Picture 1 (spheres, rainbow, N blue to C red):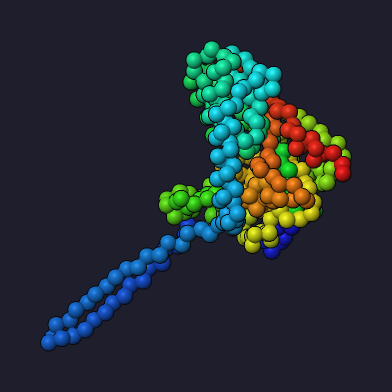
Picture 2: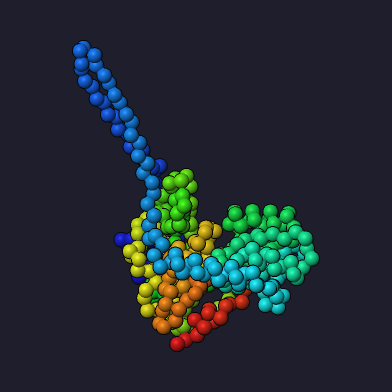
Length: 345
């Protein structure tokens, strides 16, 4: 079940979350005095307590540690054996860059190493990265200069992206929605959702809560929401529809109940920022955790099947070519799990 008015503020498309004042520092002065043989002793001490932001998404489920370790071991082995194919993996190539369709369960560095088997270019760089189990579009540049321009474009959020996610939970009562929240993790901690009004505040360890925004649209529910349509360049400017969730309190599933409903939901995500695990975190907050995403309450076993990876696919990237200046849009074919989910039961 997604957030209600008790858990988040629903506002119009043009409203922005207010900023909370800096975290207060509480001081207490304690004075003690005593008199002995005409002498008076004064002692004082100042006690300072930092009021850190509180994460609004739950910690990692206990089950996730062992499963993730096993997945990492398998992915390491698969990555060592991985061979890049022009036919199966190359989406686009020119003199400056290569767009690759990364398979699920392969590490990005293995993909970069494998590119050397199909090109003699001596200098190759990853312009973006995807999580181990996320499939889809990655850009590899053929020079340091091109890499620097593209990395800057990603950092400044000038690269537009869409993702396809297969989720489970209760079918949303919205067609489209935008989620705005904070994003961060304490020292040695895990990534968590924070309140939008906590953006800019310091966390234990010295890191800072950063802004995070994702727009979503429902593509299908149990395969019954019409035909899948490919996103166009015009669609990349996502228009906010039924409202905006400004995250300020825990979601309904904040007690560990995310992704447990009976519906299978395919959503398209339009991340406005590029935070680590952003779409996975926001799906969890909405109560539709990504299937197989055990870190963020996604189901591991569902309707008799076991899921050995999370089901998230980097569908498209749209960017200004770093050399020609022309707009380029690259699209990765949908993986088998997405095609299957889009078919009616």
